[in-house]
Length: 590
Image 1 (cartoon, rainbow, N blue to C red):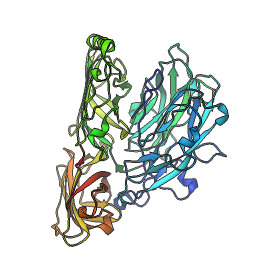
Image 2: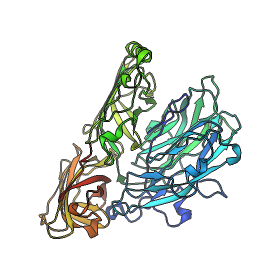
Image 3: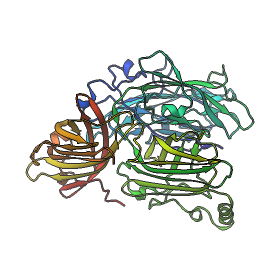
Image 4: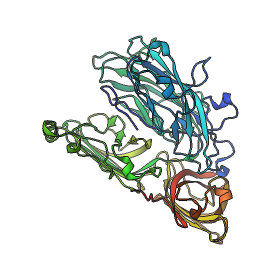
């Protein structure tokens, strides 16, 4: 999710949202809507794929990545929405990023997660703006959507300590959000804050003051200006971003006209819930009076996009909670080995350097242990840490926590949750457990898919398992129908009943028919499944496993539970692998 640069831990995540556009002018505007066509009848990935980065000022046509000081390091995010997540970002259409920096010492690179980072090197001011094409490709089975646009990075030699951008990417209600308010020049380390926070609901002209940015579902990292979380209400979030350097200087706005940068995030209305990871447990213990004694225990399930665990070697595993960032130093490495476990310091250094690292670890350095397995289970344990006040004010019985997670180049996302807060003197504990407290923005993620070929026709029967919960502001009580969409064009609606937040299908359906045969969902435990008869390749775009020639494919699906209106709508995709005449989410490569 993030990449540390210079003296700060500059961050990176990738998060992406959905909308519909009718022309290039609309497709490149930042006015978002996901209501078109009605969510209950929406085919998988049918929302138009488009970028959400701010538009460049006329006469330029494309997206504005902000300013960058000559010779400095850059961390920016390319963001998109629509189609089917997860997404892949590349720069392969001329002019490419590689072509833009050819002949220079620049190390700028665009990762598939949408992270743009690296040094500008010796690029001259006369090269401004650096411009290149970026293509986003979605995960819609065998017929992926794609979108290409021009991006501009403006070079700055003013020497003024100021914000690099004047605008943030747009957001979408109930979907993960990540962007950055990077600063130019100044003297690291920096401290970022958000003040004068207001929220104007969609359709209203009245702005309401908010106590903190977390009240909107977002947070700003005090260390590097990353803004992340999940907005849980449609409207406009406005705040003043402030940054103070180590010498006490205050950053100016991008234009240099004022102190601080007034910033807005426009949040579009939306019913569709799609998660990249889902936190199953979080426990934090903090003592603001005694440093070096704080701890964090974190567990989640994540969509690895079919990545083999061995391919995670040297990948960074990083956790963010509000203003806190997990360590990644020689003494406390956050990188993984080829078995999905954090590397020991002895694997990074040796001799006198290792003795120095060992001494630091025994004295005051925090400890960090992380692991990732083939099922997407991620566990992180941090101890001997000094979190201090980076989580914000500890008052009341609950506290909103924005959680960000980066896993190398494949996962950069965020969540928002309400944790139980207990405080005694200078000591506080924060606890969240999935299933005990309804998530503020809801969750939905496919965890397993089993497929079986039909013996006589080009069709496959599936059982898809998922985890998910309705948002805290919604309820699945009284739902009477479930609509399921799979792949290119398959859709079916089946009657269901609900009792005590448990949903099950009521109709008896032929298991060999091209229909949904069973739906089950426990809204309290957050677990469910959808079973189908044999769905033809013509409808799903998914060939029989026996005809797949050993190649993996994507299983995209959405599910809506309704009465007369949609009560819960989840969408996602998962990579599946063929083996003889069956499919499974298990990657044969270790």
